Length: 171
Image (cartoon, rainbow, N blue to C red; front, side):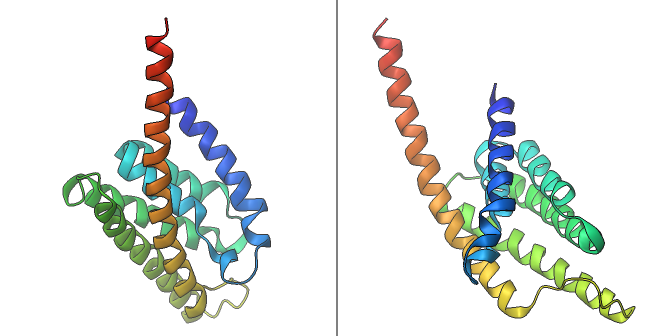
């Protein structure tokens, strides 16, 4: 049952990431919604679901010449995130989520910049590159989104527990 809700959440968030987020003004258009939600799923739900979320985000939503670069960034973020979620940030606190998000976001941006350097080395001009301003905005919005997502997930879990507990007790 959990997988159905995650799949529904993935489809809804992917629609938001493709349609709404790019239409926002300049700093907010760089919001990495799929990366934020992938890290939250990796931390709060399960490592396997989080890795699948991140890998699907890298494969499904990017097309054209920059697909291999972004896919590699998501693959690296998923591998590093799975390792650190299992070993270092096993506690389910906001600090662990922000620490995991910092490492995953840093790996994501570093891999994107490495891909930029490789494309510049081989003289490809048609590939969209991640600028320093976009990277800063992405990283800051990643941490803000993770903090807001943690607060929202805790509040929703408590609300659902109260609703279903009352409904179960009313029978």
